[in-house]
Image (cartoon, rainbow, N blue to C red):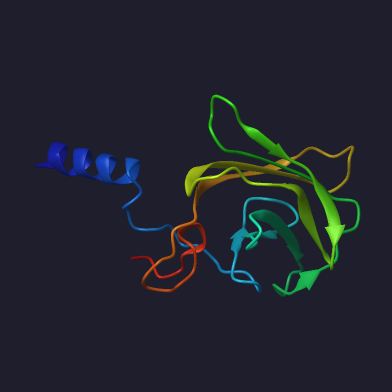
Length: 143
């Protein structure tokens, strides 16, 4: 029975139907990256650009200073590397994410150009969750 349970969990995880880990929603409805320093919200805009909003200890947005952000996403055999520029108190990717609704993301944030990067990895599933109406990558309802 334990083997069947492990196989079921593995299969469901592979197709993205597993229960979500505890995902924190950011001030704009995106996913809070808790493994990066500084903490930041990852949000895909309607124009399919990535917006990174840095968060203070109180969870409220703070403007970027010297942070350097790169996001790698898309097809693993031909990944897209996004670079960022300041925009309205956040950083906005210079390019759009590739077409599609479900691919891996690696977000690297350096507090300064000389500092070591901290990393957040997750699946960017853009399908809307029926429980909380956030995109699945930022789903907070743990369905």
